[in-house]
Image (cartoon, rainbow, N blue to C red; front, side, top):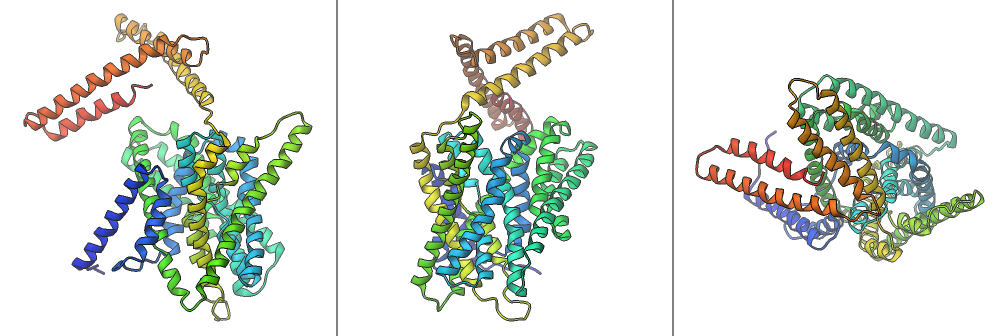
Length: 530
């Protein structure tokens, strides 16, 4: 099949791409997380004259977009942080998902008149969170790292919990029967099966990559690992989300012993650009979904539907706040009995206001079948899809735009001293290991005495510099000396770069040689702070 584009189609595509670029530029200048602006921009563009109707197939999100995004998020999530925050993450990713499903179902049944099966479907659809906007704001304004770890860890797991519950709710709606025992067993089987598949895939990928020394191929395999975990788990009927998350955490732990310098450099650059582009496309498409959703609701009382959607959004917000504060209060009571202070209320307030939803909610809503097993239309489907979009839009706008003010009001500050201390410890230990190795190699014929002395001096200066960073009694002399050296080196490296570009412009060297030298100069600049 050959796709044919008219000039009008090409102009429409150009307009959409240009609009997306403008929105991304505005997001930076307005200091807004780009997901919020892209959703709002997509919503407005969707009703623009001449803009084609864009429908987002749910399979594209769940099978096309979700596996690599989940994998890279899990890959960069530290196993230590997951262990430290396991209790909080579990209470949010499992407990809160169930509470949200039941609470939203109760509200939707009472307010919107949805049947109980339909209401539980809606509750499952709107229960998973999306952390992209929240973490972007948190990092920019300086939120304690542990809170970011909890929010990201929650989103990694709650997608799997929500999709398992959604499958159970859809089965009850289309068949007309429900078994609590079967639902509980299905949840346990999905979780344990997904983890098992993820571990198996991670182990297999680890064995394969150990034998490779081809950076582009290794990065490609890393990109495909999310699919390698998701697809077999989905075929087996277990949680593909948890399979991907497990494989990502597993590979994140073992990758340092499998990769070369080139693979790590290329991999980081690939994932940074890829995740940005994929998220940008995804949130832009989410914004474009309102028009086809409203088309399916033609003939429905619009204002009544908006009122019901607002109540559902409010229920989603309040349920999270109530759950987080209730759990925090119980934890503080237990801690007080043990003589500890417990988690601060300000931390609970931040987490309770980080319930933004995203593309997974839209995709889950679109997964709802059109008909029951008897062939009759599944009533309430269009309303459920509309309510789901309202929750995505409402949480992104209300929570996303007010979160900076909430952070400032709570007085949250990044625990930079702890991070700096860890970094200093790592760099000092690395320099000490280098000096130990230098002592072992000093007697080798190829190690010149003056070279060894110069290298030893560089590493000793590095040790002294990072030790002084975390020394509260230090006078800052070493750090000032280091900053002056970095400034000088940057000036000299920039002069080198200009000279190489001038040689290329004069035709004395090729572009290939220029890029080769420029890459080495860029690497030197990038490591000046280390």
